[in-house]
Amino acid sequence: MLQVTSRSGRQPVIDIPVKLVVPAYRTAIDAGAATESVDALGDTWGPDRKHAAGSYGHLGTTSTLSTTRPITGAADPTMYRTARQGMYEYRFDTLPEGTYEVEPGFAELAARRPTGRVFDVMAERTQFVPNLDLALEAGVRVAHPRSFTVKVTDGQLTLCFVANAGKTLVNSVRVTHRPDLTS
Image (cartoon, rainbow, N blue to C red; front, side, top):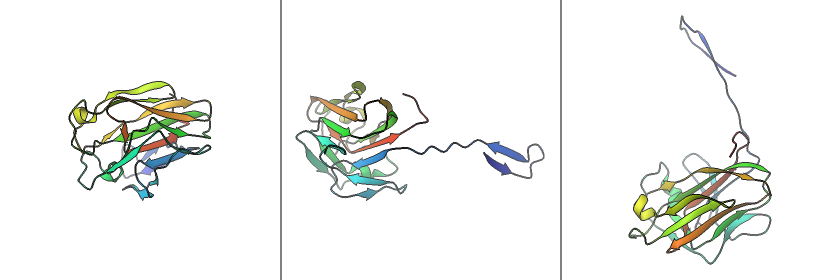
């Protein structure tokens, strides 16, 4: 409980309930990046990598994209300047059972017309982002963050990308254990 004291005659002391949540797992990936980076809030984002058993990473025949041009729509655009394209999955191993917040970040980095890149995003066999067309929904070089919660019961989280047109793309992925939420 946090107490705020003031000189107010009506309510000189206000009690504010505070709940501290400590995640058992948190991983943030700067997709397409070869080195670690730190965002404006001081959070560390690890470099992108291929999946290795017991760890995390992408699967599939992939390539990376990057831009030095400005990204709009984000308080901190650094996580949107690189991207991984063509992957079919990011896999996270050895997770404690529970509810997870999944935060993929998207931005189309090159001039692309609507319907040129359309894909679905699924986690744990459930579709969360259907027919994502970044050029149509957000525009080019505009951040398009998403967030959803999933339940993990087998120690592994699979984040799948299914291409409908063109190649799949993601700029960042953060996975955080959230014992305070239920999916």
